[in-house]
Amino acid sequence: MTGAVPARPPIRPVVLVTGLSGAGKASILRVLEDLGFETVDNPPLKVLEELVEDGMDPIAAGIDTRTRGFVPAQALATLDRLRANPAVCVSLVYATAEDAVLLRRFTETRRRHPLAPGGSLGNRVIDGIEREKDLLSPLQDAADLVIDTSELPLPTLRTMIEARFRPEGMPGLAIQLVSFAFPRGLPREADLVFDVRFLRNPHYVPGLQPQTGRDAAVADYVETDPGFRGFWARLTGFVDPLLPRYVAEGKKYLTIALGCTGGKHRSVLVAERLAAHLRDAGWRAEVSHRELARRALAGDDPAALPAPRNPAAAADPGPAGGESAPTPLDRAGGREALTRIP
Image (cartoon, rainbow, N blue to C red; front, side, top):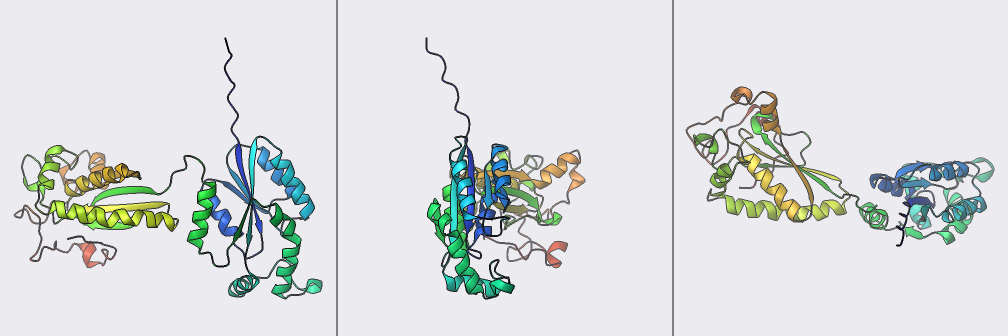
């Protein structure tokens, strides 16, 4: 009988970021931090080895001419020792850019170049750039990935780093769907806001009033509104193309808020439907219902929320022209972020 094969110990991802000052090392470290890496900028080389050996979470570190006691030969020796360690997987990323671009960036930021601080080294940025290029050339030769950021937009740089170093199973864009009642105000965290008060209102149907948008009878009532099918096609046609673009821009969180008068029926239904639609498309989507949560905390007290303003109109159309009557929030200008889909 063959014995069980022992499980292979996990390998710790280690990314070392180096390169020319002004070429984007800090931006690369920020992307890695967003990916869940523990990030440390310019630790002494001895400390770097201790950090790598302590723990299993992904770690990224910046090393360059600002590192205390930096000597290229010692940095390469440290890199060789780390690469020889079977418990870690080390990648060296080198950021560079054209001289003219680096000069422009230093001019725009008005920062001193670390190798042109004045005194015996002089204070011309171009001289500091040339010294640094000579000093770091052995690290550039040893790099696993060299990135020229001269003409590279930050979103493209982010995409490159994420594609190369995103840990397995690391979630991408996190989408939160929130239903709410307009009289209670807009959710402050909302990125996109949709008004669904034009749909017919189950509040005025005696058998449906006590139910919520999560109940099948309410869903059937709202979805048989003659305007629902066209609205749904336009809503998903608006949202679906946005999500890949948000990802390309590096957005990590997106909150979509859907509001009606009471936050109990229409907005709840549409939020649930949109969350299911996004999950079916492969997105990570969660849903919450602000007013339902408030009602639960209040013991489901019907007085916990104001009643709809026009009980005579089952479709809750508001004033002539299909608009809802202005609330105090509207008059205060609180709906400036509102997106309407008719």
